[in-house]
Length: 116
Image: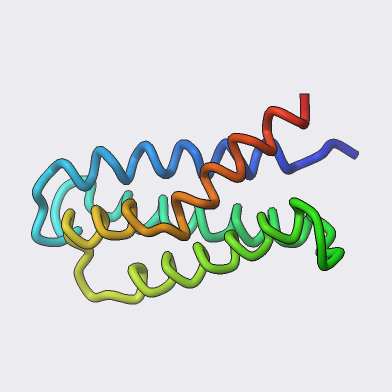
């Protein structure tokens, strides 16, 4: 059985890149052409973060515990944004700036280097 962790990491990294582009569009909402893609991206990122939590062992110490904590906080932030009736570029920009999502990304950059 292959390790799904690299795939989860890729989904989150690619999702973040998409969110950066979405934030730069100056959209008032996710209505209109291509807008639903932001919700699909957020769902994928949340599912990938949930997968990371399930794959890592929370031993109460060590780096896995840090990644799990940051992933859970990112899931909560993504859920908040996803629950909004309209997802504006400004809202996504604030999610991108969230220390929780940035911490998870940094964790994943480090983790991916250790996976070889």
